[in-house]
Every structure is written in C-alpha cells, then in structure tokens.
Length: 576
Image (cartoon, rainbow, N blue to C red; front, top):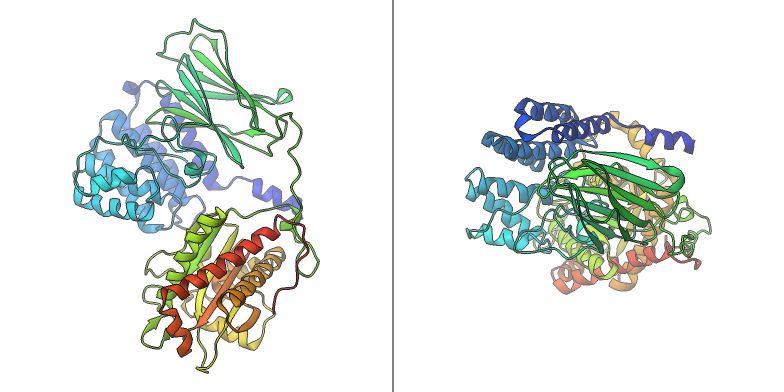
C-alpha cells in the first residue's frame, strides 16, 4: 500500500507537466538572440501555463499564474513592449485577488507595485500595495524601499522580480543571493539601498559566461547559485557512480578563458563536497557539483533573470565532514499511550505552523457581554502566539488571516496544506447557556465523539458551505490514523499548558468532527481558550495581559509537543 502511495505521489500531475513544458520553452527561447525572439513565442509560453490556473484551487494554479507574470515582464523587457507590463500587472493582481494567502503574496505585491510605479504610472495604486507590504513583511530587505516609495520618494528601479517556486532551497533572486533564512520566507531581490548578507561560501570564477559561484547551506538543503554575465542556455548531466552532477552553460558572446584550467571551491557541508568550474570546450563552461554521497540529489536547475543566474537545489540527508552519516538524533518519545506513530518512527519535526484565528469578517462568532466579539479576541491571541513561536521556538508561522477577514472553513486548512505546514491550530472562544461555565477545552478530529462534542462542532461548522456530496472525500481525509494520533497528542499538550498557565478549569481533551480540522493533512487541533458567555472570563479577556497569558500558555504547549518529537523520554497521558 505504501509503495502504491509513493508511486502515485511520484506521478507528475498535469500542472507539473505544463510547468515543465513552459520552462523548457523558455530555455529554448533564451538560447536565441534577443533580436530573433517574437511576441508570439512569449505568448505561447503563457498559453501553455493558462490551463493550469483555469482551476483556481488546483495545486499549481498560483505557480502558473506567477510564472506567467514573469514571462510577461521578460517579454516587455526583451522586446520593448510596454503593453506586456500591463499584462504582467494584471497577472499579479489576479493572483492576489483569487489567492490572497498564496505563498507568492510577498513577491507579487512588491513586483506589482514596481510595475505600477515605473511602467504604468499608477503611484497611488502602488502605494496601497507598498503599505501592505511594509506592514506584513517589516523584516524583508525590500521594506525600506517600499516605505520610501509609498511616501512618494524617488528611488532607482529595484530588482524586484523572482520567478519559480517559493521553496526554501531557492535563494532570493539577487547577486549574491540572500541568506537561507530569507530564502525560506520566499523574499525576492534586495533593493539597491539594502544589500543582502554574503553567501556562506563563494568562488570568483570569470570563466566564459560564469562570473562566480555562491553556496548557501541550511539544515534541509544546499543552494548553489551560478552567477552569469548574461542570459544563457544550459544542459544538465550526471555521473552517478561518482556522485557528480554537471551543468554545461553556453558561453556565447563571452570571451574564452585562458587562465587556470580549473577552479575549485571546497564546500564540505555534508551534501556538497566541492564545486569545480572549467571551460569544457569552446563556447561552453562546465560547472560540476560533487555530492557527498549517493543519497544526495541536485535538481535540474532553474534560470532566473535580472540579474542572470542559474540556481541548483541540492537535497538529501547531510553527512559529517568525513563522509560518514551524521551523528544520530535521539528518537522521539512514544505516544502517551505507549504506542508509536509513523511521524515519530520517521523522526519528523516541526518547521512550519499555521495559526487560524476563528471566525472573522461578517462571521463574528460568539458575542460576549458588553459586545465582546469572538473574532477579535481570537485574532489578538493568534497574533500574539505567532510572535512567540517565531521568537522563542524559531518556527515559521503562517496565518489563515491576520486581519478582520472572513475565510471559509474549508479554505483555512487548504491554506495550511499549501504551506506544507507541520501543525495546524485553530483558536476560538467558547459559549455555553450556563453563564457560570468557565474553563478551557481542546479538540482533535475524530468521529467517535460525544453528543456534547457534536453540538459544539455543529456551532463551529455553521459557516461551512460543504454539501452532503462532500462527505465521502471528507471521510477519506479523516481516515488518516497517524494524523489523529498526533493531533490527540498535541491537544493534550495544549490542554495541559492552558490549564496550568491560565489557571482555568479543565474540561479536558475531546474529539469532534470540526470542518475546519477535516481537510488538514497535518496534526490539527481546535482550542477553546475561555468562555465569552461567562462574565468573569469576558472581563479578563478585555485585558491585553490576560490575552498574552493565553498566548504564552499555548506557546508552552506547542514547545512541549515539539520537544516530544526530539526526546525519547516517556510521556504521561494527556488530560481527557
């Protein structure tokens, strides 16, 4: 069964095929002199991508739309076609409108604003995106330029466009590229006024079309950035028995190299042993990536323009400096009932957490005494928790909403799935006909639940648009037993910390069929952190210090769960 599943996962989707075909077509176009390229050829690439975004909910829809925007920009620059800039702007606008929580939002906002300022003469429209960009991504190296531009200050046109998938393995598009931690957040090119930090390792080359090579090493991958004098075509080859991957890069228009026959950069980061560069033959420069073992894989590479460079992602389990496997990591603790989940057997860890503030927009949720809205309290606690998780645990945090916006229940877990999250937490405030009811309770997804839990699920599911015909795929989704086991474990840790940290009555861990949890492909939990229907709870929730106290407790619960994935210490049963 696992083999069949793996085979199914390995089968390329229609979107994968279309994206690969579009990339190949672009490579072929780059091999031609600019003077020989035509608008029809660029349009053909866009037409290849268009069917992928026809279904807005398709896995690759955002990638295809974003790639198309990049093709339009290249079209405008190469052929001097100003109308193509307008087409690029529309593609970015469509992406942001149809998929506001896309992983490409950061780059799309910045790129759209630059197009509006420098090519479409729409500074007022650009200012809206720039202010949003600055508010959402204050740590981004482009934020300073965004602030200047939003105030109407003149700056040189920055390098702003990045194409390709927003993967941690692909650094930001600038030479030298940004550090790996910036790449993981999918930041694009740094502006002229904010140069990025240097690469982990670099080599000045000056052979043919290759000017230098930069290497960025992170826990999960190594990125090799080959900086070019100008756009170029390339081919990839391998020598499996020697763990080599090489790229032959066209040096058309570049002077032949008459210096050293070969240059070498010793990397030794556990994945890449070394990188060698030499003029392979007249008109071709060969860059060889030496893998540290047979388990290391270098991908096919991707060309990025402005500035021109080839980015290669190298993945696989890193080895120690001597080539032996890295020191073993302590096995994860068993589940509280003594059993082991597949998650723990595989040694999986937390990296990305999606936080969901319940309700939002016209869906107010519970309205407590004095007009206290659940949607507002949930959002405040969620934003506080996100800050703690980033600062204290070093986790990447994605919000389903970070303002007063209505997000359909099914879309919330879809956001988590698209972000490849390792954990999903939905934060709510409780309500009960008994005004004296106080305390906290935490839910995980299961069908074997009590009448009380079913009633609570019915209240939270009221905003769902799902129909009866959706039941079958939902049932297939919640049949993921491993996810249920880990969800219950996480719920126990959160409940324990909420009771201890907030001094609240313990209503235990419960299971229910919440729609907001059903679609998640990772451990997912819904926490009811207080009762808005209770006068005392409502009074405390008005105080920022108490909301911070709840966020602190939730952070400790996630830290406790996180530690269990990295420690063999036995665990006690969570409260029920």
